[in-house]
Image (tube, rainbow, N blue to C red):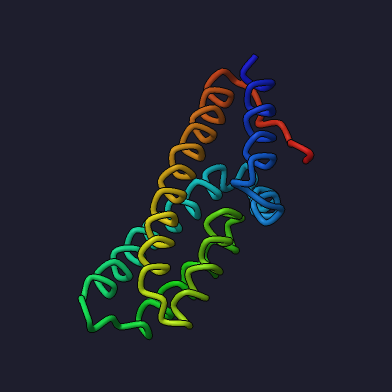
Length: 149
């Protein structure tokens, strides 16, 4: 039951655009010697997300004196991190945020950063659910099924 639920849930994350093929590639690097590899990498990604989003929010909170260079640098880092873990929606929003930043569109930057924050939190919850399903399978003595998308 858990394996089918795991497969269905994983497929839904791809179909809903939360994840892309890079996440699949990351999963391929995980083995018995490093069973928590993906969870650890994703955890570091979320830590970076929080710091970068916070940095950008502070930079945009400087009414009349926005540090677009800092926002641009932070969004560039976040886009790279998102890409490396397969966080498709976050990466897409980073592209839009960078465009707003490059054109110094304050309203667009604020709106886009809010969307990035919402999307990051949503992805974090969904991946936590996925990792919990993995743990249930392993604790029941099973193996994590490979999911072909």
